[in-house]
Image 1 (tube, helix red, strand yellow):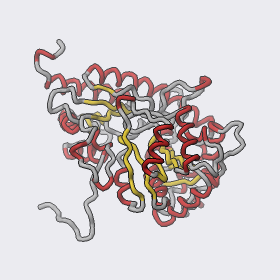
Image 2 (cartoon, one colour):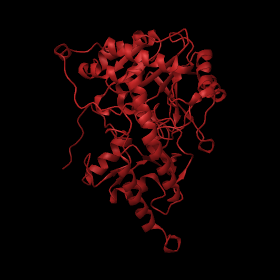
Image 3 (tube, helix red, strand yellow):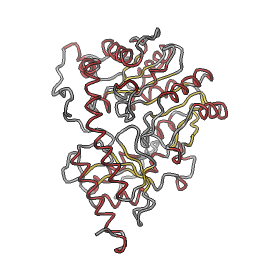
Image 4 (cartoon, rainbow, N blue to C red):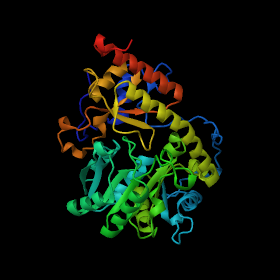
Length: 427
């Protein structure tokens, strides 16, 4: 007999990666099981990469660090985050970040929750598709009216400043939330377009809340031959006046997801607000791990890690994109960022021609993927789920080690091959 509902508690859905891993778990999947290929995972491989800095094998704990951390984070780490942003993005600019422009949180979701809790009663724009966790976040905070904005796959999900201005004015947006690089499409707003976004936000008093957790995974060549690192911090004029709030952390860009160390960078008034929100939401992050993170934020170490990611993940990206195309998955474009390929399976034989059907068939071969409909962010289910534009899409992760990625694609090839008419099969 299944357990019945408990009065006063609502059912909370499992979405995205949580759902697919739970479903795989019903068939025996466990994290690290070598018989499975998890191409649905939202984390990068965490081991050493060629040419990268040594990984942290252990974390010492100072007796003083048995105490709570400040809700806004350790001062030393806040200073390290500010200095990294200044070194990377603000050379020669008069307005520079300080510790007062940084708040530390216990992971990306905690950082997002603090920001959402600090928002007033506003119309908040969000893009379709985007990060699955935004859906529940925007549903819980009822003072925020979530306004969906469509990005066109036929244009590679590009969205320029002119379009952004139209949306802000036409929908009365007080804030905009977006992942950049975008999860799941890999689309990036960068260079003049990103500068234009910030100018539009400044001119129209619209807060830009930019999730930059994949900023080390930007694949377009950088100006001047440096690392192609992506951040709105490069185009902020005044760090305390421009309405730009940046979220990042160790999860993806430093490949330490288990540390749950993230940060919010923005105007001091915003940092004061999100720190106050943290006092009743989560109480602050881990003090020992914050202290251990300080050395990881040193520019030399951070750039070495980013360079090793560029080498290892670019090769996996190129291989997966080519292989998926060969298998009949239509990519809307090669990913400009992230460690995902986003493609349509609508041209494959049934039942593989929907994201959910493809996912279910993959489970039989011990391969996990994520159906595209989970990224059709729909707070409160106000839009009909059946009409999702992304019902025929799938997100494939090249976050795992290369051997896992290759094994997963080989198994999916067999799944697709078995369902094609004999006349259409390659010899």
